[in-house]
Amino acid sequence: MLHNLLPFIAVLPALVYSLISLFCALKYFKTAGHLTSHLIPHGVSILKPVKGMDEDSYDNFASFCRQEYVGKVQLIFAAASPDDPVIPVIRQLIGDFPEHDIMLCINPALHGPNYKVSNLINAFPEATHDIIIVCDSDIHVAPDYLQSVTAHFSDPQVGLVTSLYRTSTVHGIATALEAIGFTSEMIPNVLVARQLEGLTFALGASMAVRREALRAIGGFESLAGYLADDYQLGNKIHRAGWQIVLDPCFVESVIKSENLMSVLSRQLRWARTMRVSRPGGYLASGMTLPFPAALLATLLAPSPALGVAAVAVLYGVRLNVSTLLSRRFVRDGLFPRWLWLLPLRDMLAFFTWALSFLGNRVEWRGSRFVLKPGGKIEELV
Image (cartoon, rainbow, N blue to C red; front, top):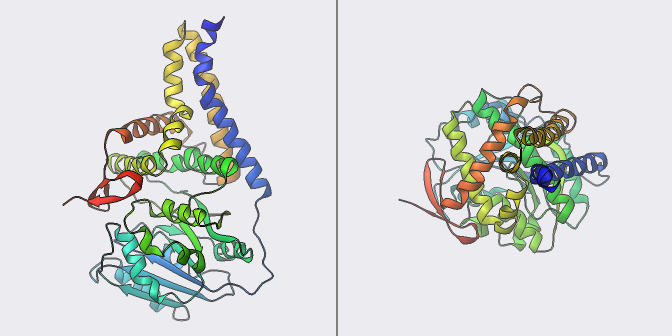
C-alpha cells in the first residue's frame, strides 16, 4: 500500500502549498480594501529612475499625472545621461502637463554599483514631501493609486507601503511565461509570506516610504551596494521597527516584446538575487515547486498509471488555483488563454531555481555583476 502511495506523497508538499496560497489569497482579498483617510492628504514625491525606453513609456509616465488625488504631488525623473533616449518623452510629458510639478534630474554621479539607486540618491535632494514613492519606469498605475497607497500612512507605525504587480498584455509565448509567473508564483509567494511572518521586504514595482523611516536606515545610500534594492529597503525598514503594509491596488508592469533568452536571463537574475537575499527561505522553497514534485512522482510510481494519476491530482489543483487567482483576484486576463503554458512555466521555475546555486554572476541593463554574500554586488569590467 505504501509503495502505491509514494507518487502521491511526492506531490503532497507542492499540492498543499498551492492550497495554502489560495487560502492566503482568499483571506487577504476578503479583508483588504481601499482605505479612506479623514486626515489632510499627504504630500507625495514620486521618484522615477529611468534608463532607456520601455513599452508605452509615455502612457506609463502619464498615468502618474492622471491621479484622482487632492494632495500635492511632485514627480521627479532621475536619469544619468542627457543622451538617454527617454529624455524627449519626459520633456513631452512636462509640456503636456504644465499644471503638474514635474522635473527632470540628470546627474551621472555614481554612489555604488547599483546605478538605479545612484539615480535615486542624485534626485532625492529635490524631493520636497514626506512620503517618497519609488516606482519602476515600466509601471502603469490606476487613477486611484495614490489615494490607496497614501491612506495607510494615517497609521504612524507604517513606514513603507508596497504594491503587488501584474502584467495583463503579453507579446507571445516568451513574455507570457514571465507574466503568468507573477500570477502563479510571485503573488502567491508574497501572500503566503505575509500570512506566515508578515512583510519583511518590499516589491520594487511600487514602494512608498515615509521620509522618517528612510532616514532611519541611512537613506538610499544604504542600498547602493546591493542588487535587490527593493528587498533591502523593505528589510532594513522592517528591522528598524517600522511596519510594512501591502496595498491591494495592483500596479501594472508593462513588458515589451522579448525573446526567450532575454526572459530566461532576467529570471535567473531574479532567482540568484533571491537566493543571496533570503538563502534559507529560498532553499526551502524548492520543496514546494510543482515540476520536481511531478518528476519525482513519475520516478517513484510502481506503475505508469499511478504516476499519471499523482501528476493529474497535482495539476488538477494547481491549474484551478492559478485560474481562480488570475480571474478573481489578480484580474490580469491571462487565464485560461495561457493556462496551457503553466507546466512549462513550472519547469522554467525549477531550472532557474537550480541554476541559481551554480553561479553568482548576473546581467542587469547591459552590465555584468558578481553577487556577494548578503546580496551585495561588484561590477565586472
